[in-house]
Image 1: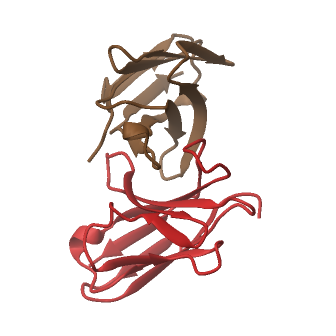
Image 2: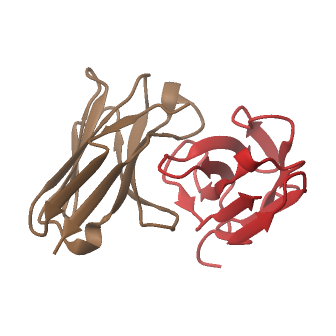
Length: 114
Length: 111
């Protein structure tokens, strides 16, 4: 596709459930980022992939959060045992360059944990 | 943690006026970027300024960077109602491999 695609756009789940959020980056972009954005705040870094490997996962808040990018393209953010505090918009972005240049963002996945 | 701090937090102006938003950051950087976000949407890149640049223009946008003061400003000239959005600055804090965003400025342009 032309841009970064994220699915689902909205996800409502119950506390304690498992959730997967998917990101399909722009074709050819080697760098992929996950951010989390709470209401009224700027995006908060979670994890960065260069190719298939997680180059920096220092932003993952705890071990309930995990992300993969097995073939260096599509990425999945996985959240186990969801908590109400996980409610936020999860944004994915990709970039062509290996250095930190312009990021292309998807529309985000809004997660609501009841 | 957030690297940048934008001010003001919110700005309301009339169409045709200029809007100035400021950003301060804490660490050394290679570049600073500005992004725009319409309500409920993803972020869109506006402009990137490198640490060895002092000013950059793109259409109605003018960005300045003062690395000695660790600050940047975004000026939108002749604002339009369609400029209503949140604006974020972001830096590669400590010349790292990720962008760190500020909390943003909410701009409202009244027609």
